[in-house]
Structures are given as C-alpha cells and as structure tokens.
Image 1 (cartoon, one colour):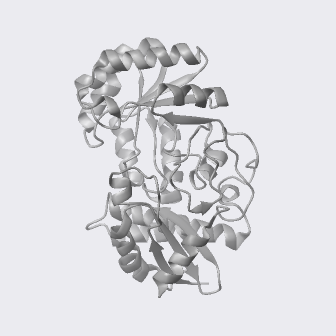
Image 2 (image 1 turned 30 degrees about the horizontal axis):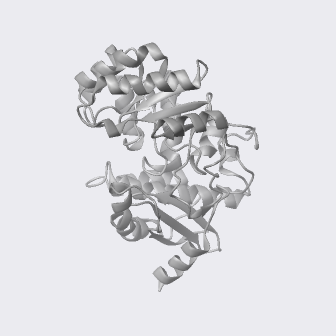
Length: 353
C-alpha cells in the first residue's frame, strides 16, 4: 500500500466569521492510496495551505507507506522547517495528518479512538460547554443541559470597561445559579494590566478560567499573568506542534492547554500534547472539541473530558454533531467515522479536472 494522491479544497462555509477564519478558511484534505482507501482530514489556511498540501507535502508523500503516520508527520515537519515551524504550513500538515489517521483506522477496521484506547466506550456521554455571545444565549445553553458556559467578551474591545464585564459575569452567575461552570474568553484583545484587573474583578463569581486574554506570543506577560491571576489561565488555541506546547509548559504560561487539532499539527500533535500535559499536571481542553476529529482523543485518552460546542458554520462533513444538541458522544465507525457532503465530492471532482 502506497500513497497515490494528496489534494485539498476550501469548501464554502456560509455564516463563517468575516475575518481570517474565512479569508484563510478551513480546508478539506483528501489522501488516497493505490489500493483504494481514502482518508479525510480538515486543516486551515485556505488557498495558501491548499498550495502547500498539493506541492511540497504531496511530492514528499506520494509513494510513501501511509501506515507510518508518526514517521510521516515528522518527515513533513522536517521537510518544511525552513519556513513552516508555525502557522499556515502546520495547518496544512494538520489536515494531511488527520487524513492519514483516517486511513490507518480504515485499514485496521477500527475507529481512531480505538487505536488510541482499545477500551474506549462508544455512546458514553461526554459533557460539553457552549460558547455564547449574549445573556439569552447563555441561559438557553445552560437550561438545555450544557455543563458550562463560556462568555465571549471580545465585543468589549481592547480597553474594556471592567465594570461592564463584571456586570455581565454577575448577571450570568445569578441567572444560571451556583452549579454552572462559567468561563470568559477575551479573544486576545487585552494587555497584562487589563487582564489582571478583569481577573481580580470577576474572581468572586467562581470563574473556571480566563481564556486567551492577550496575543499568543506575549509569553512573558502570560507567565506573569499565570503567577498573579486568581483565575486559571487557558490558551494554546493558536499554538503549533508539540514543541510549541512544550515551550508553553516549560514557561508556565497556561494552566489549561487548548490545542486545535485542525491547526496545531493534527492528531499526532494532539496525542503528544496530552502526554506532555499529563507529565506536567495540566489540563487539556481542545478547541472545538465536539467536532469529529478532536472527540476521538477526548473520548479515549482525556481523564477529565469536556468538549467545546462545534462551529455552527462548518457543515460540509457528515458525522458533525447537531449544534442544537447538548452533550456529545463518540459514535461507532471506522477511521474518524466521517465522510464529506455531496457538494464537497463534486468540488473535488471539479478540482481534479
């Protein structure tokens, strides 16, 4: 068995955010073998990463044995290391890596989660949290059964009125009651001083974590924030490779790591992040964990599983959870148990032409 083809497309995603997540949108990667297997993966980076996948990665992989997933992952990283240690190239590698894991599962007639843990339980309920943008969304999500609510506060800007954020958190706590878990996500808008002011002000409301309050490369500030904050600091959504997460751990900048499997390097990287976090005594809570790729790891190897609600605008795969539902489960299947929509299949046919 050898890899015969590597290609990718950027599917249409109506309703996606009007920012880099659309401009450099999600891509679907297809890897095919010479004996008829097809693996599907999702990466990021739009047309730039399609080019990377269909040139340097394709030329490296075609003719290789797809069963050596970890070896191919290392080879892709080494092959692109002069220009791709972080960012777009790793987003492309993520999609390819997931497609290779999908092929591995299909070859062995097993779900990827079973490859990670043969004792994994299908159908076991996995608690979820919902990211919300206003008071009504928060109450609706918690009433429906999510165990936790994450308040997205980007709308308060770079220099927010701290009292307004306190008011939001206070109202949310009052409406949801003492048992609800509440988190706050600043979307990297603040300074160290603002982050500390907000953390101190909302700590009395029993906040689980403050997520990504500053830009990801401000590691010195994050280290100071992690030392002083009365609330746990979460981040890593925009970090890449196991080496990148090892640096975050060594510097002590986050209490909770949030890798995105479609961006950070794929399943091979996510498994290594879990191992590093276990050794360091840290929690991992993958970004958008309810989606079909991350849930395989969460269900099989996470000691404290908690899955974030899925992207409502990414609907080109079968096997995506219903965003109106609460809680999630690992569904039986082989590989990742996903397929692509008919629209995507047609797009690949046209792309091949």
